[in-house]
Length: 282
Length: 280
Image (cartoon, rainbow over all chains, first blue to last red):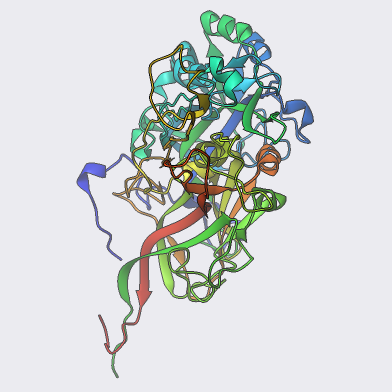
């Protein structure tokens, strides 16, 4: 089968033949082959006041910004797995050793939060509200953080976190201020804003790519270590919350709220090498 | 002996889950929820399993068979699109099908659905018994969707007196309520190639799906997502007209149910025997 090709989109990837690895034959006769498949590895740290109420309480997650700011660094790919974290946030089968051989082509880091910027501690109209945490988290923090990608004993990448454009995200939104509630509350305007933010262009072509492939063996120790600058750590330790986002007013004029959630997701792009089930070779 | 060949045609497969107060036409209960609460009650939502063109409009599904591949298909990319109404100003009707005119509040669940929820959902794409892709649903961007958003300011519950201290505004009647916010967007960049590609442009390695094979896309909501969605009322209705401004009091409101949804699509090439041709 022939496929249309766009020269402008050419990328430095191994060919299918190059990335098909012959393994020692266990039965002395037939050859077993790993198949190269497009894949991602991702892992997430989060800050949410909801953490104590979650049935899975993933290690490395925090209930407050202050606690997150107190940590010296934050590790990805060697802390959580699908047993202690929902699949929305990680797809690691194993916690501290890679589950399969992986040829990494790029690394991305996504700082994300809810797009509705209003937060309140108390679900009642007229109380203190905050508007900045989600914007600071998504727009400012990446500039004040660094990442080291470690493979076995080697440091393969040391870089500013803002340079690791994630290659995905959201588009749209804008920023809106609006008055709300009853007449008595008009002094509180604006009480909310919508910010749809991404780091870089949320397109696969905009991910940070390694100049050369990084080959990660099966059962290797792998980690990406995120470290905030002293400025960022002080900022986080000063920032109250996360709290709750007001979303409506009931018939009695009482705000209803839901807990907000801040996260940082690290993504390794590349190809995994696996033996397909039921196939000697693909 | 004539030689029969399959013809290769660019094609896409899509399936959609909706949340809307009403179901229209023959829309099935499977995957067409009437409340966020009902949607959140299920941890996992399956695509390419429940719907076909027989029970769903072509806008939402283009499968002939509910749970089998209609033809040989080579999937080059996968995308998940979270869509919703173009405004967060949505209303829940009371028992008398009326809106509470005092409670005009932009609903955060619209922006939550479009831009926050995808972060809290895991995706698995399987062919037969093999899991071909495991990722966060936002990493499989749809490659289409609204590309601009309006920035608006909604004034709610203001009286002329209350606004005296601010910029002058002259609107009648005196009790002014102006819900005007347009907010929209999509996941990733609305450009065809901005999807999760199997392989690269130079070296595509499409997922081959045999005819009659089982394909499945499974979205798994995190516990946090389910908890938040279960809190939300709605999905609510558009307010198409609230006032007849010649009258001093609110009159009959014109509303229509808004519709939220998740659409999963596979872009690729299908292999079919063209009708009436020995080969294409």
